[in-house]
Image 1 (spheres, rainbow, N blue to C red):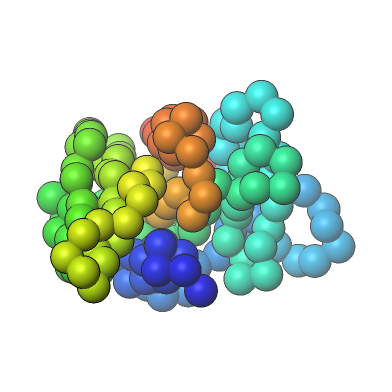
Image 2: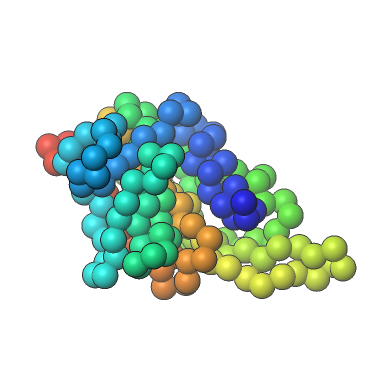
Length: 175
């Protein structure tokens, strides 16, 4: 598994202050499997993107054939919305083997979003190719949605994924 994939899973699975380990998510589509996400969750996707429920029950979306956004649900953990500083600290901790720049930090009472650029540190002291990424958390009612870009996302995809995370809604829930 690529280091960026591991980071996304680590941050989503163990974000400090983010709550329980039992992530569950879904699209609301009937794919024949029971989904543990409640109906009424809306993740606004850009035109041309599609969504699926991954084998680990995370919600993933992106252009056809290339998921670039992962969303995990932490039911009842809305009060544990991490600050953007907490997200940045966790990213720095997990990405010690990468050169990292924090490109955008955005925080409100309902979400924390962090866009980054990372490049692997090479054994010869240089750095490898840069890649964009983002991590975020969105509180909707009593629930917490944890978001991350997936490896292979373009800079434009990362911007679109960030916007989708910012706008997650649950019908009937308070914002």
